[in-house]
Length: 346
Image (cartoon, rainbow, N blue to C red; front, side, top):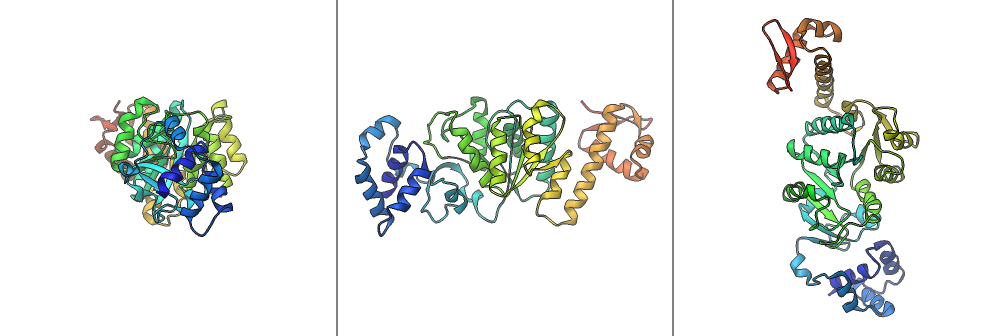
């Protein structure tokens, strides 16, 4: 069985498909099956030793619908081109189809408050587009925030792991991982029960970049995994968006990415400027979001402020200000007392 032998070779090289791919291409004989048999003989593969080392059930029938090989018709070219050839998955493989627009979002495992809020706001804006799939890595911090917010906003999402699809890391994300697998897609280059390894994560980050045309890196410090993902995006010629939210060491990696060609933004709604959507609806949403955001910030800083004063500060018509505040009241974000003073709902 070609699949079993291919998987054994893959494990023989310690999950390094780059080496295996080069060997296959260099030794190709008539067809793939003959080539795999030839490599088995050349390398003197000891099946029992590999099976014992990885403690894996090589009855691949039991993984039907959970494993893809590079020769499968629906295996994306972008994965093979980035040296991924065997993928284990849970969920909807179709979310990797060519016609689906995906945006990868990654960031710090220890986000600042301003970073967490920014991430939430970006997802809310993207959810309004109705045709975007969110991709991330399921690490603690920004990855978790964006995937959780995507679920709350009924968006499809893809989580790419640095461990097996049946292993939960971090364990606190077990429920989140299961929910994504049920409604989206979770996938990995590693055996289903493979524990995480610190060397897996930097290599996994290339997949986070390659599956999307737009990558957003939020709060990258120096030498961080997010910085690696951003550099992969630049190397691949992807659109890299880098929020720069404050001048601090937490954003040193972000600054480096911006200096290397990343697009700097400072407001969540600016993400829309760099998406390939030309739509009046999107422009209108951007304007509405900016207004909502500004009104909320004013009310937070000046609790009890009068509606008329908000209108004067923002230099927008009073009826428009009333409309914005009414919408915010409906959303449960503010309330207005009998004197037309406005307060944030905590």
